[in-house]
Length: 85
Image (cartoon, rainbow, N blue to C red):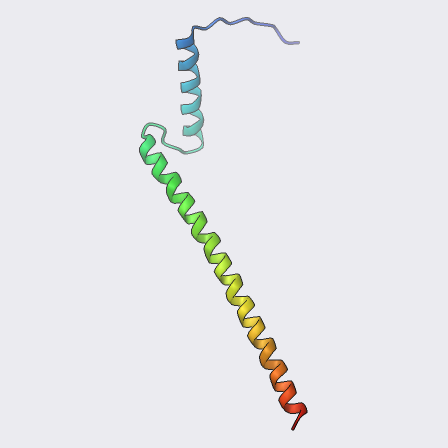
C-alpha cells in the first residue's frame, strides 16, 4: 500500500534538489562534478579514443581485404601460369 504524499517546493528548492541529485548521481558513477571543465576534457578524450579506435578498425579491415585480394590474384595467376606450362 502506498501513501499519497503531496510536497510543495519552491522553484529554488526544486533546482537545489535537482542539482544535488545530479551531483550525487555523477559522483556515484565516478565523475567529479565539481570541475565541469575537467569533466568535459575527459569526455572529449573518450570521444577521441573512440573515434581513433573506429578509424583503426576501418584501416585494419581495408588492409586485410587488400591482403586477401592480393593473395587471391596471386593464386589465380600462379594457377594460370601452371596451366599454360
